[in-house]
Amino acid sequence: MKFAVAALAVLLAVSYTAEARVLLADAPAMAPMAAASVPSTAPMAATAPAAAESAAAPAAAPEAMATPMPVPQATPAPQGCALSFVQGNSSYSKFQEILNAAPSSSNYSNILSDSMAGITLFLPTNDGINATLTKFGLDLKGLLENEDLVNEVIAYHILPSPIEYAAFKEGYSFNTLLKGSDLRDSLRVKRSGNVIKVAGGKTTATVGMNGSKVCMDSIFPINMLLLPRNSIQSSGSVST
Image: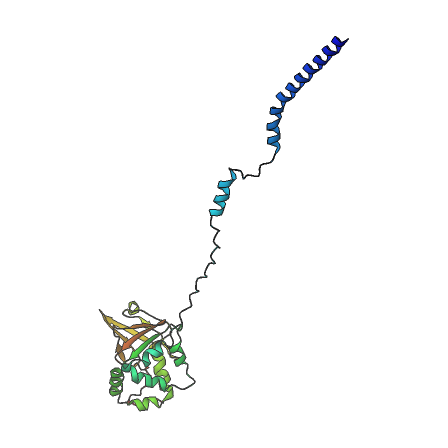
């Protein structure tokens, strides 16, 4: 009986020891699992460079506002044009006196000062006017006192459109602003080489080669005052 109890005790001891060994053998295998389940508080190595790179990148500069280009302003049109040309040259002061003597109802000042008129002005020099008055035994004062004649003389020196030197061809004729004029009051071209003349009703003038372009106007200096055919009587007196 005692022997049986002792044998059972030995058997239980051996069984316990074997189970303990099994538990001890299994215990190390469980440790890594426990360690793996614990979340790491250390920063991940892979994310550190990205964070550093993000910190090093400069902030994007604000986009510059585009400065609007200035709008070019239109150049003012020249004022005065043919009229200013006459007023600004002392060689034509006597024709300026004729212009000033025109009645207020006439429109010649406006025509000669209009930058868009586009006319041709035959402009007699002071010497040319003096030569014309001497030829017909007249004086400037007597001409200026006759408003009708002043109107005719001014109109007879203006063509309604601008022309160039190429238009001066032998036998050509130009109509002027003289109202009621017929072909006998047109200006006829006489040309021989570079010598150009325009023949009017009473006088023939040589056209200077130093013409000017002012605004849209053509201006040609001439050496005589152009007179319509009925402006001067045979006696040399001014027609009334």
